[in-house]
Length: 350
Image 1 (cartoon, helix red, strand yellow):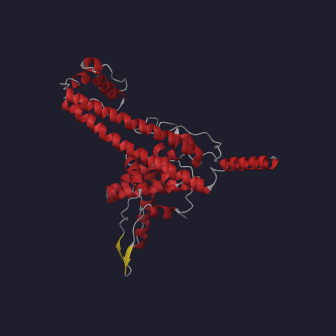
Image 2 (image 1 turned 90 degrees about the horizontal axis):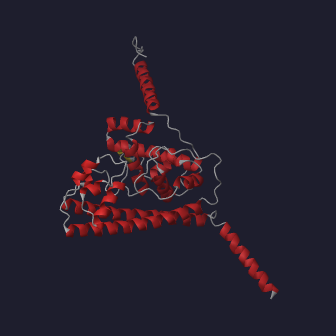
Image 3 (image 1 turned 60 degrees about the vertical axis):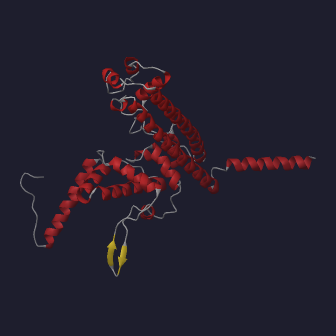
C-alpha cells in the first residue's frame, strides 16, 4: 500500500513539474504560437463578417433616407450605435435621436437632426434590426477570441522576466478601431523584452500579429537580409548570362509582408524619419516601390528588436533630410573630383 502511495506522489510531482516547465519547453512554445496565430486569424475572419453587416446597416439606413454616414465618421462609433439601437427600439423623433450625439462628435445636433428625417418603412427597419443583431453576434465572438488571445499571451510571457525599465507612454493614445479589448502592450513588452510599438508603423495589434506569424525566436533567419528575403520585400535577382533580367520583388501571399505594406502606407503620412524616407522615394521611383522599401525598413527594425533587443528611437524627419543632403553633397564632390573640378559653396549659402 505504501509503495503505491509513493508512486502516486511521484507521478503527481512529475506532472506538476511538467506543468511548471511547459511555457519554457520549445515544443509547447511553438504550440502556443500556433494557437495564438489561429486565434488571431479567426478574429480577423469574424471582423470581416461583421464588416459585411455594417454595410447592411448602412444600406438599410439609406433606404430609409437617413443620411447618418454623412454626419458621423463611423456608424459603429458611439453616436452611430446609440442612434441605430434607438431606431431599432422604436424611436422615430429626429430631435430625440440627435440628442444622443456623443460629446466628441464633430457634427452639431442640428446637422444630425436634419440627417435623420426619413420614412422609417417597416421592411427597412426590420433589415436594420437583422443586420444589427448579426453585427452584435460577431462582436461577441471577437470578444471571446480576445479572451483566448490574452490567455495565450500570458502563457507565452510566463517564463519571461519582467523588464526592469517601466513601459513608456504610448505614442498614440487614441483607441484604434478593432483593437484588442485588453492591455496588450504590457504583455507584449514582457514577451519581447522591448516595446515594439515605439517603431513607427507598428501598433499594439500589429505587434501581436507579427509575433503570431513569425514567432518569438527569429534566429532561424541568420540575418535581417534573410528575413526580408523570406518576406519577399528584398529586390529579386533574375540573371542570365551575367545580365540582370529583372529585379522586381517576387509575388507572394505572405501575411506579414501584407501587414508591413499597410504599415508603410500609414507611416508615410507621418513626420518621422521613415515618413521622410517614404516620401522621398515615392517622388523619385513611385509609390509602389516606396511602399516596398519602407516595409522592408520596418521589417529590419522588427527583426533587430526581436532578436537583439534593439531599442528604436526615431531621429525625426529633419535628421533624415539632413543626412540625405550630406550624402548628396558628398556625391557631388566626388563626381566633380573625377572630372578635375572642385566645388565651392556659394556666398551666403550654408
